[in-house]
Image 1 (tube, rainbow, N blue to C red):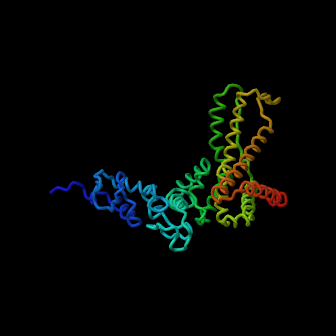
Image 2 (image 1 turned 135 degrees about the vertical axis):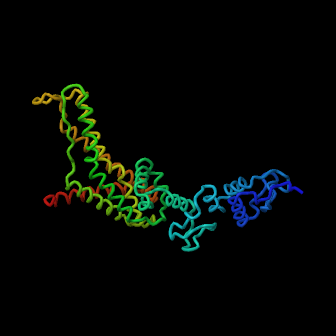
Image 3 (image 1 turned 180 degrees about the vertical axis):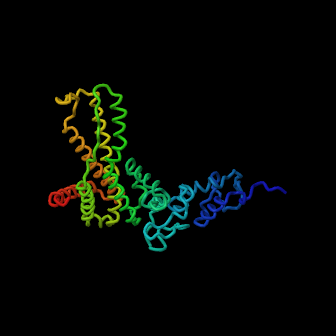
Length: 360
């Protein structure tokens, strides 16, 4: 005799697992959408009461969506599609597989499932702090891209309860320092032939030779390193605010390491903008040099351009620090802390530069 309904064994393993977990939490959650009959996972795809067809997978997802406070674990593993092994306590790292209570069984921390989900997403993602050893190039590119174009999204992937990994953060700071230190020279290698072989060769008027020499000496590089150290120390001196919002020096280091993404490219951007200014010699009525008879641009224009670029770099650092303090550390007056720290870092660097300039 042929049965009128298909047994539950025809369902996928994932659906069977969902049914078992939902019934384990509350056997009355699975109900027919038409007559509200309680379905105890009795192995049929039709309601025994009214006969309406039931898609058990859709029903399970609907139950999870409408009972998220009680079924957070199921929500993030089955609906948000986060792997169960990635869900762990943000404080002690204890696995939360199958955990549906609001406390970590290991350390007793109250579980904020959104923080757990963000922590899990970052662990399985490509951020440099977590993937610096396994995929250094991909992770550094992903981190720079998110930090420079979508800092709010970047900070949503970090959990404030996660203990930052100091080593990759220091490496991240050094990488940005190298980009800043050699950004001009690297960009000039590409700009120089373009300006001389393309622009100068095809532009009307007298032919000119463009040369882009290094703009940063050892003293400037030391100044940047000193600025980084003193700015970070100034951020760490706000002990009262850090304690009030449960932030330690590692959390501050994480914010600082992500604050100079845009600033590190300022020297390369400066070289590109200077090349654009040089190319205007062919298309803008600049005054002619009385000796050579060719158009020339006053030094003040180049100096002003450089100061503007470096000024915007400092503003970008302030903005990135502010976003990090607001979205990650949840400190509402982070904009003031960032401004004071940058000022102190700049002042201390200038003082040391003046005092020890002879050593450079």
